[in-house]
Length: 310
Image (cartoon, rainbow, N blue to C red):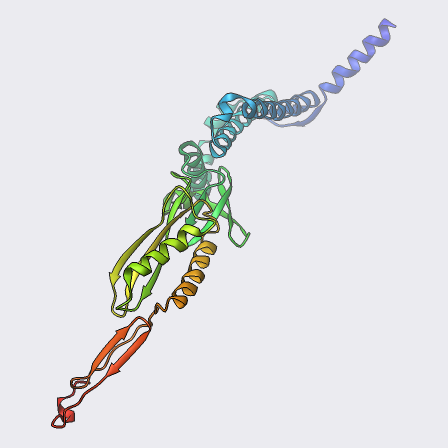
């Protein structure tokens, strides 16, 4: 019986020491392969356990979704980096010697993959500084989208058309990106509208204010603001400012406000004028009222065409 056990033990030792792949730099055996697989399995289970404990702890509850995601992503990269180094040491690869011997190779790789390394460094900056987090609404090149995931090299953004865009991280750090949700939960937007000269500005202001105030997506805590923005060439320019939390579909809110403004202006006979130029001849008089434009001209008998201005 003892001899059988010894034979089994010897067979197991021979099996574990069986070489799968050997070179001058390392030797991969069955034992080394099992150790590497065990290391990665342990790392995966350890990260899952760490994530579960962190999300259920008080420390995890005090952070928002974006900060929790950032902490977990950085922890994940650190854990797997350490595991890869240990795995290389396990199969006999001297990491320090490998780095020293591969300096020239890394220089060549750095020149060939400089864009990739630029994206990687930008990803670390984004994750550390949290300039962008999962769930943020951003505007990039007149395109508004929601951040779905932030990786080391790329960031995934979902547009309003439900299209996923993969954006290199270097683009997010080197170009101007508007983060609509970075500082406040609510954001102010504006809708411009023009009315004819002679309109009752107080009535126009009251109508615009009430329209924004009664919209279901407008923020109740922040009151709308109506400004007489400018005296335009052909109209009085008003700006309706409103606050909302629904940043992703704010264009739908603006459209609703414009529809309601048009309806209310029609009901109250407030004209939204088109760009126009008035041609005067002699003593012609033009009068503009809230319900339209009326012209009355008087030309004296002794007035000829040379006195007119065209």
